[in-house]
Image (spheres, rainbow, N blue to C red):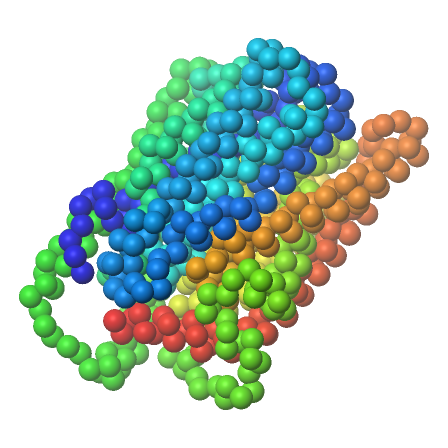
Amino acid sequence: MMYRSWTDNKWTTTAASIWIQCTSGSLYTFSIYSAALKSTQLYDQSTLDTVSVFKDIGGSAGLLSGLLYTAATSPPSSSSSSSSSRTAVCRRGGPWIVLAAGAIQCFAGYFLMWLSVAGLVPRPPVALMCFYMLMAAHATSFFNTANVVTGVNNFPNYRGTIVGIMKGFLGLSGAILIQVYQTILENKPTAYILMLALFPTCNTLLLMWFIRIYRETEGDEDKHLDRFSLVSVVIAAYLMVTIILDNALSLPSPARICTLVILVMLLTSPFYVAMKAHLSETRRISDTSFSGHQIDDSNLLAAEIHSDSRHAHSGYHQVPSGTVREVDTNKIDKTTLQWGENLNLVQAISTSSFWLLFIASACGMGSGLATVNNISQIGASLGYTSSETSSMVSLWSIWNFVGRFGAGYLSEYLLHVNGWARPLFMTITLATMSIGHAVIASAFPGALYIGSVLVGVCYGSQWSLMPTIVSEIFGVVHMGTIFNTITTASPIGSYILSVRVMGYIYDVEASVEGGNTCSGTHCFRLSFFIMSSAALLGSLAALTLFFLTKDFYQQAILRRLLHSVRK
């Protein structure tokens, strides 16, 4: 393994990706400037909702970003060594091309929107404003694809952990951007739109040169990734405390400035972790460069089994003995033997696994998105105050983070230690989401608080589990294209459950009361029982996928992990 500078290694890449993710969550802050957009453009509520739909479509339609990533980063087939493979990728392009394309769309979409809202250009037609929003939101899929897929390429043995970290910081980005807005641009939503045009764009253009693919495995990767995970948990906890204090005490401007400064200091810690990891790896390479000891595989495996109990509480280094068993390949479906072998989009679509993931995502992501999009109206119908519903909306990003990070980390741990196939974790989280919807439907005192936590955590977990499962079943080469195609299930499910179910039932109940608003537990009860059933259907789809891929995980994934431990 060759020595690399502190700017040319996978740890600096990870830290830079985290920072880009931290400014990529503008989709979650639509409520900040929606009122200004509505008033300046003379929209009614249905027109504003139409613009919002294009926001959801743009954020979920990542097929182009996946195709571009594949074209920009796929090494030539003649590449033989890891170093030459990475060099070939750099010559052809790299993830920075995808990030640059996202930055251009982010700036163009929000800047044109700002010109319209600020009155610097004539008021555009609704269709054109929808296009602006679509373009701005579409940038998020480019940022997300470049960072997540690069992370999976750099840490193939800890896919769940790295996806959880990247998705987790994306979930936190909405809260981070809101903290910047409330401190610097309070009550200036028009200026906030300009900030969204400049801040994420400049941040991405500055850091995209550090986002590279390193097709090599280093020692103690799990230890360093755990440090990144700890940083994310600390930042999430800090944001949660800050949000609660601000909602409860209405912090004055000097206090908000102090909290923002502390937040920025915390956000610099990933680069400290990256430097420490690089120094550790440099020392390890230096210490082992003159060592020529070779350990017999059988002795290493025996030592590995002997040390299982010693490492049981220190991390997830070990692969469980007994989980890698011989399976008669004649009894396995032919498609199973192709899993993990870098299928392209057309090949993936022809498998039942793709459609099971699509159904599970439509039910899980769709019902979760429908909940957060209507949580303010749900709270109003149940008698919650505006400050209480505002707190729930603000804290949603925290529960979203807990699900994204926690599902990635725990599923990785259980795969390495107990040999649990990852679709089983998706089954459990979707079943829990079904319970969360049922809790909200029950409408007992505090039900919306408890239900929103359950739904928020389980909703976030889907965004971490689905891309990881895609990379394991269909391979890494076309991962960006495939998981972004499955992501389109989110707006489809949201449209059906939010507009055709929740909106329709709410309007019927409101018409019975003789107006446009509905008050009482009956307004959303039937809707949430339907969404509870939908989440349960998604859980059954994930359970089917678990049984379908169980032998594959026992053979391919666990053998790959065992091979990495031997190396």
